[in-house]
Amino acid sequence: MLTSDQITAIAPDAPSLKAGRDLATPRKWQSTGGDDEVLWGLAMGSGKEPYQTRVSLTDLARKCSCPSRKFPCKHALGLMFMAAASPAAMSDSERPPWVTEWLESRVTREQKAVARAEEKVTRPVDVKAAEKRRAQREDRVNEGVALLQQTLLDLTREGLASGSARDAGAWENLAKRMVDAQAPGLAGNLRHIADTVLRDPEVDVQLPFELGRLHVLLQAITSADDHDEPTHAELVSQLGGRLSSDATDTSEIIEDEWFVAGRKVEERDRLITSSTWLLGKKLQRWARILRFAPVPQTIAEPWPLGSTVRAALKFQTGLYPFRAAGDGSSEWLLVPTPCENDLGKLLERFSSALAANPFLRVLPFFIPLRPGDGSKWLVDATGAALPWRATDDLALRVECICGGTVTPMCGEWDGRHLRLLAIRDGDAWIHLTYQQP
Image (cartoon, rainbow, N blue to C red):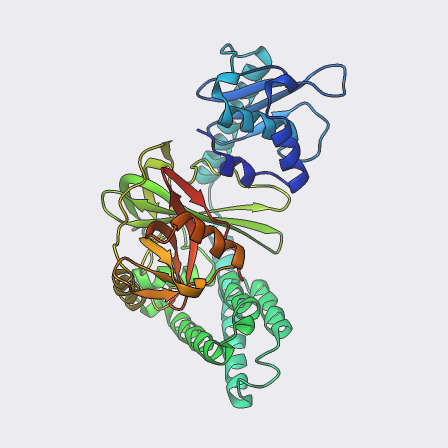
């Protein structure tokens, strides 16, 4: 089941998106067809022969015989837009041979990939070499942690009003050194300081708070082996690493109907990260699915925003686990009842979550809200309000949808501001592009 937002998210650029929308009409295709697994079509172009376009509905993989170097090309986008808007236009139900051959070749490649993975698992492990690599990584991480601890001490002596503490370039350079030390998680913390904290109007308050959080994290990392298993797993995750293969797998698997409530896509260092929040309808448990792709590739999300996914998700071990992975089938159902009716419940949940995991940055919410006076607050049905961070365009859009009444919304609370990701408009669940004001 395709949606316009889902297709727009995988467009490589604005011109391709526009061209794809222009092609979403039957008169520009010699023939089109589809079934539950794949879409296909013969697009009329400047060449002698029509372009053979196919799109897999299971993962939105696509292939086209056109010479375009963009992925997906405008023909694939046009075919998907047409299928989403006018399913009846996909009149052919019998797959052409070139579609069947493509699907079979994909199955063959997947089987070979599985075989290579199984061979890798069964291949004898060079224990000495693996132990040497692990020791080398630990040494690099320890050196990075020691460097960062010394930096914090130096900044404390100089004072946080000094040029060094307020220099975004210096924090970025330090982040690069953490990447070299194989601690990308610490690099992310430092880039958060450079990109967000130093630009915050309340930097005089936020910088000491962020450095205090970082100090707690570094102190915990230096004694990671002394902590229990969930804490150790959380610290490994904060470093940006993975548990060793010989570690006990205590991941929790939860089966539920997961409502795809919110999504944001960000780009950093030519890496695209898609973060999707899911809410379990039965257990009211939140989960976050992360997907990555290098630029210029795009991320094809198999679960459209507003759909409900029947799946068993495997949660990553940690102090207050959100991150999960899993597969499932999706269908359109009614938007579920919000899990909390007022902002007070959100603050209680945030307090409990922060007590369990002091490194937690954001907590998702699904609450009926409306913009308050001045569009700088979101207000619940009881009249309670919390600060809202949004661009003027986003604030106006939300005000128009709400019309002065509380409306179910999904977003994130970071302890200081609410940020919206999606809102209900009638029977539709509307994606709100996340923008940092």
